Image (cartoon, rainbow, N blue to C red; front, top):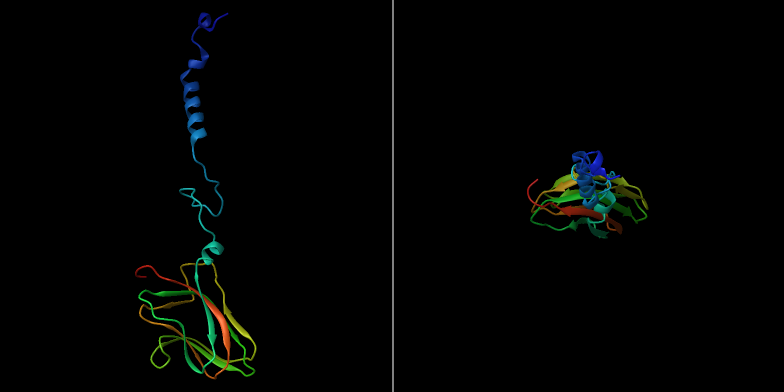
Length: 165
């Protein structure tokens, strides 16, 4: 028996045609897996904080003189500091002070007085790009002032702001 004898062909049903059209469209769609690392609106992948942290600029700290030690020189944009590690390698306590600009006329950001011998200090990256530990104004340097001569090691992770903030 032919389909035409009982009525219209069921394959030409408008509902079946719409389902077939949708199945074809979905088969050609480009899909992103929705995970916490995806943009919920577009579905596009986003970098995790750990991946973004790898993109920060890294400067080693090697300071051995008493007084001002320029850690990050002056740049034309703001400096956003996300991570700091300092290590007192001397056999005596030391006074550290972190400044925006020279210590004589700069802004004191963090005093670390009487820091014990052979110990360290860390401000780790907290995963929040909107709240760096320090923001250094454009045209200013990031300075470590040490009270005594002796080796201070460590590193700083930062980025240079793009535009006005």
